[in-house]
Image (cartoon, rainbow, N blue to C red; front, side, top):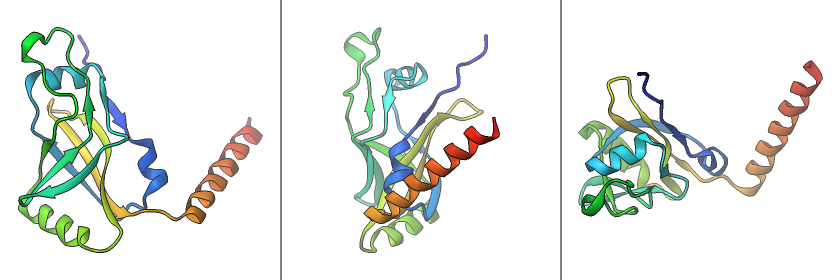
Length: 149
């Protein structure tokens, strides 16, 4: 039986932020959360990462309740701790102290070893003219793709 690959992407992140640094973090999850993510019932589009007591946590990541979870189910929007090395945490924290820098989730997936991982990005928010430029580039690429066929 082949495992279904889970790949939940925050498409809004590439449009809203410039990507400066990218890290892969583990997440502390409960059993019902893991089962719910493996069935694809998670949303990271509104999520963001912040430091609490020297630890990096993710907020507003919605993981739907597992249907067969009974009374053991988790809270869908609870705060979850991210697992990174001390060196990575120091690098992110020093970069996050700058004005206008955000820490945001990019992708939630299951690794080759079966662990659930979260790619996080560190970068500044884009201005309106940057977003218009991105839209223009996408339109050009779409038109070129139509011409080739």
